[in-house]
Image 1 (cartoon, rainbow, N blue to C red):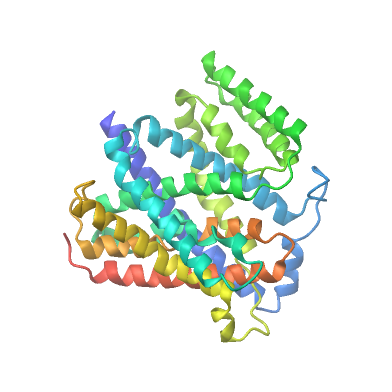
Image 2 (cartoon, rainbow, N blue to C red; image 1 turned 180 degrees about the vertical axis):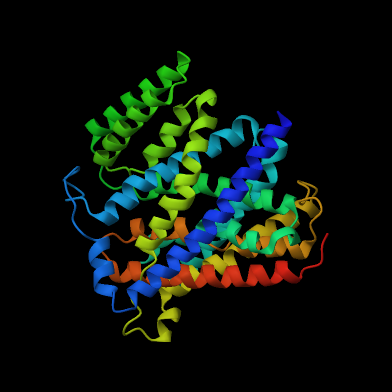
Length: 383
């Protein structure tokens, strides 16, 4: 059991790290495409109407909508499976294991949100983006750690993964509560019945994946109709899948999510045209609030909470890691790429100019966090 668990963690870290490198390449390609002679073709392809009209509130399906609302539901399904696994027998199974990552993740979400709200306080219409700098992109962060190799102790890598998983839980709750507008109650009730049927299958110890996946697709459709963001269906479906089937589904989804879905999301969402923009845009309230939230807020919240927890003997810091290395890890947690871009699109629907500013802030803050975290961990003394 112990060998199997360690093998699973090792495979997870490897897939996240390699996927993070692919994500970096896809995002860079999107920026190049959006600022090259291919820009018109890039934006036309991303927003091309494919049909059909699945939900009248969303209009005809586009490539962008399929990626953000359908493929990302698969990403959230994997996130849900990982969360369930951590609570059922992984790194969050006991209160002793949960204390430090839950505290660090909570502080790492609240401080960036507070900084964002402080910077945008005098700018009407921007408060809805408070959650944009609150999320950590584990794939991107693990990609940076992969480049550093053995310079980073394993305990620090696992703490970062665990913090990111708790962080994902918070992001899912935020999306479900803060970014849900008008509800279609019959569709929501139908989704509830489908979810109940999935739990029923698990109760009768059905372990074949096909029935669960068919019901999960129907659940996605009903949630998409309901007004709750469709990706929440992925997390809800994960909670109903029994433990005996969870490992198999994680193994199937991991490579598709790491090497196709998340990079495709990055390519479709990271492209922002810089034509006509001056460097002053970096200091506009929205990009500045996001960049400061990610870069300053994450390191203050996460490093500060770990340091205070250790001083108060509430929880021990990661074994074998120096405080400089812990600080470098906290800096890497400021890479908020995937989830931050995703929340940014939800925060400012129908406001493409603000979504572009979100992208600039996310890219700026994430890049600064990645470079600073890499430099600190590259030269930090070992614990």
